[in-house]
Image (cartoon, rainbow, N blue to C red):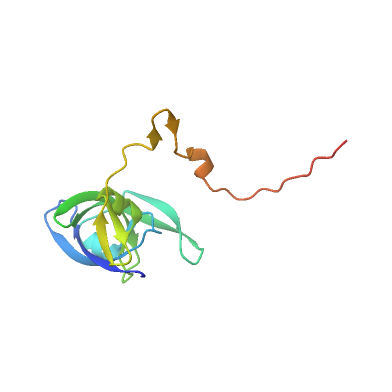
Length: 147
């Protein structure tokens, strides 16, 4: 088991051309990361920027664009982060979910999955409320006096 790569094609802003790119499959990355020089060569301009936490705990701000990605003949437009020039391209969780694919770490390939329409079962909700899934910084708690 361990990390593996797959080939995808990154499309130009007008979808007129695609460039083959080997990407590292990384479910720990929210969005896909493509080196910024590749995205700019394909005519992409940043739409926004967001903050991300890196593997070593740093917080970085990076530009993002909506980019066509072709995988096994299917095309989806997905958020891509402008990575550093020469950095390793990454296929993130959002892009995999858009293609309804999941990593198979044993066989080192992406496999099709069935999309989830809802997390609610008849008469019962199994989904965790959004609020409880948000991680916040710990706060100090004062002990209550027993008086």
